[in-house]
Image 1 (spheres, helix red, strand yellow):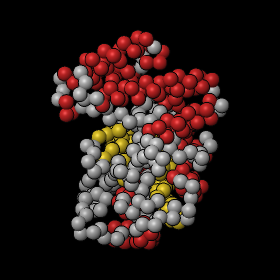
Image 2 (cartoon, rainbow, N blue to C red):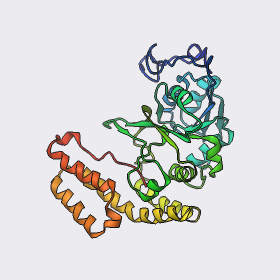
Image 3 (cartoon, rainbow, N blue to C red):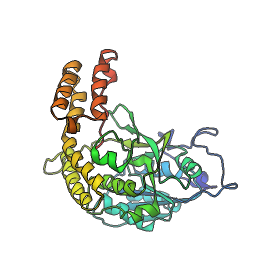
Length: 354
């Protein structure tokens, strides 16, 4: 897919400019030096699950193809879209390794179809409304070593009417995640070894909301070595149809659905994991509602910061085992910092689901 890619890539609409409609200019982060003659670059598999995301799909595809990574396997799995997605897929079909167009049982099922075909040493899925940032695959391919189980980039959250902000991948371990403590997780920026994904059981097709969380815990429990890059590697788009914010036809909010499924996942994991991780999960069950309370306190910009911080401290004294954590201390510190920062610059920005 290298060499003649830019010449064969369909031209963008006249009204669209910049990444990923155009390659990054020479000398930029995206114009990665051609190392293919001097080193062997690992094969990388990218899977894009898609269903009726024609408004965004072309951007996603271009952000992957314009990586100009010479050992790329790109798989797009479309679940029978009825919008313009089919036209877009036809337009780029000659540059995509595999296109699957058939009904599926949802996002996790679509990703599993791609994972079943994955040949890459590293694997990740980039949803059809998200983007890879320039040069990411080159960094992954040239900087990863056999001692690394997972390669983590910084993620950026963006969207129409959304003030963009960064979401770090940090403190990623099965223990931290199960305890709902100080970890932060941005899935589009986290690359896993395909072989190890299969060895830990792969993606659970029965899950709709927390399958990435479930996979990550099982993966890190057996493969804990994470490399953290300071590079912004992906953009996660929020829009009115995002799974993270949309309501179901029954009027259920996605936050409630994520929480309900997290309990199912914990039941499953507690039957599989070692005793220390089971204990961590049981503590995490208690901390989930507490962490939601911390987010609400940080989001309430009309309340006195010292009043909110005092209430957090008081509740922590009442239930120290559950409430006293690094996340609690950080929330108190951020509230008190509002006395030296303008109100417009604050906001929780902490949307990690347990």
